[in-house]
Image (cartoon, rainbow, N blue to C red; front, side, top):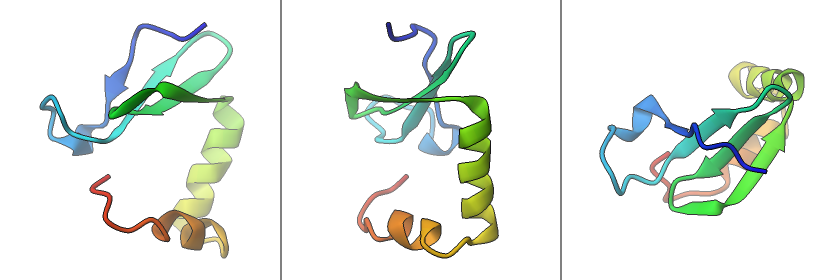
Length: 75
């Protein structure tokens, strides 16, 4: 079951049609999707997501390279 409380990233500019990350939560999980493809939802827990974001922030080898390999995306 997917949640109905999606929030768009503050970096998206707030308007409709911007392709950015949206996040929603349920008591047991966090859900992420891309606003231009709302049918594909990534579900994870708070701890794995926090570790992933920390790896991005600290520049952990492999994590940053795999994310920045997709060029041409605004968000």
